[in-house]
Amino acid sequence: MMKRILACALILACLLTAFVVAQGESLTMKVIKCKQHVNIREYPSTDYTIVGQAPLGAVIEGCEKSSKNPEWYAVQYNGVAGYIRGDFLEPVEAAPVEAPVEAPVPADAPMPGDQVEPEETPLPDAASAEVPEYNPAEEYIEAPDAWPTAENAPITNIFEASGYDNDTVVLDAPAGNVHVTARRIYQENSEYLALAALDAAGSQLWMLNTATSGITELSLTDAFVAGTDTRPLVMLYNAEVGLWAIEPETGVIRWFLSRDTIILGANISHAVVPGSGILYIGGYYGPDPVAIDANGIVLWQANSGRDDIYWLCKIDATSDGLVCAYGTLGEQGIPGTVIYDYNGAVKEIVNE
Image (cartoon, rainbow, N blue to C red; front, top):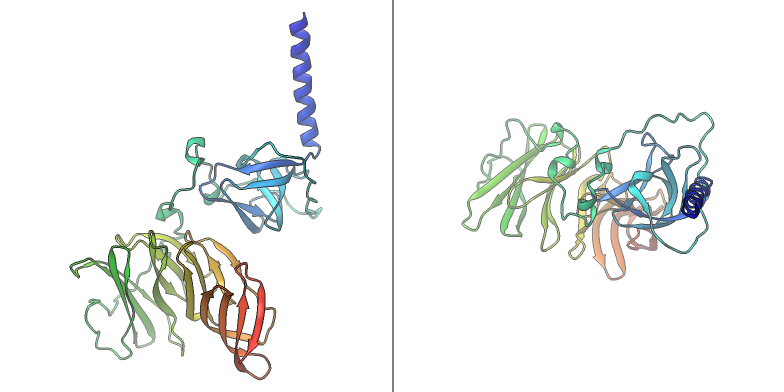
């Protein structure tokens, strides 16, 4: 009889606990089961805007179950308020904290069924213990036409000058165990760039081509080495298409960042922090510098806060911050420099 009473009491306690959580108790939660990061949405549905990301293993305090959609939690992470699907969170023991204010959902806003996006597909528990060094390339490629191709590409031999005007070698550098080189030419009304990797004997391992639909006074293509010393990446850029990150030894595309996702401009400048592999990049007609990690995730886009600062033409990563030279700064239209901290905030603006 006593055992039955205790069992009933235990069941009642569990029901009361579930009731309290459902009514808005704040929890400390850990991000689980995603391959690398989980998206934070503006409202509790995958049909709403991504306002931030939380990496695998991140601990988020003050999570509260959404009253609009109980499958989601209202969270605040790194200053970003929004929602994360509950199946990517698990409670962890922590001291109570104040619950975040749940973002208001418009009364007439539709709440369609959730469709999990590819980067949020749950992994088996055993695979979620650590972040993989890189995910397979096909998980980053957005569409077949994202692959760098150029029909009837005039650069057929990376070793030899093409014979066309403005034939320029834009990259000639080591990348891991191989050497990479790239040539850019202008032919008729297109700008072409070919990128290739060479082995220790100087033989070509692979070559990729890209082309633009027109020519401007600025270069619309580029190639450079990024990543880290132990995991280098070869970057191929086309201002009309986007940015590819390529495995040096094999030519496999690790990830692709579409122009539809972020516009980087033309005549791009860049700086790479070797230890972290974070890439800072931007250019003419583009935004202020953008920070992209070694897995192709946009971390932030800086904003100078002024309409009279434009034509980003040089980026240097220094101990003082990200030093960015602009062709025009201020009403006088003279060059100048903006120093950003490594979160994208303006530290100092200097006219030359």
